[in-house]
Amino acid sequence: MASLKVGGKRERSKVLTWLAPRLPQPMKGEALRKALAAALAVRDSPEGTRMLAKLAHWLVESGYPEEALKSALAIGTEDAKVDVLAKLAPQLARSGFAEKALEASSLIERGSVLARSLMEMAPYLPEPLSTFPIEPLHKKQAN
Image 1 (cartoon, rainbow, N blue to C red):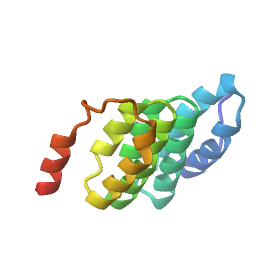
Image 2: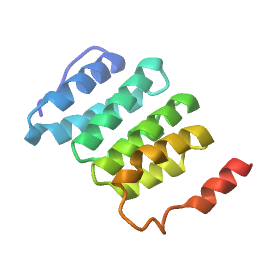
Image 3: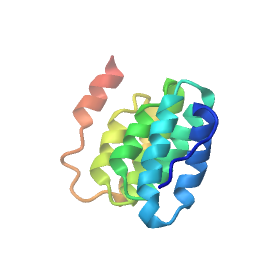
Image 4: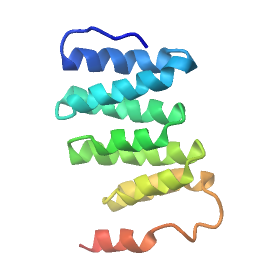
């Protein structure tokens, strides 16, 4: 992918976040990783949060679950992070990344949001769910 010369960090992040998922497959992976790096550079801004949330979705769709989870976890505000994780977990499960879905859901500390996320992803998880980390979730919510 050619070097992208765009204004400052925010502008670069916006352009890459918009452009990356629209590129053809041979270029998409590298572009998404560059978009993630650019969004991480501005993650403390509201725009950075929005870009990280969008990238999490596109990274899963493109087959990069690790990067998707990294994108969601980098979101600065706790409420926004929990919302993205709650949407990301079922998407990971539907895309065949059940283990990453469970990892994402285990980071959701709000009971009602966690319950909604688990209900949405349950049909896509393999049987049995004996490895699901129920114990740590109960301990988190008890604190």
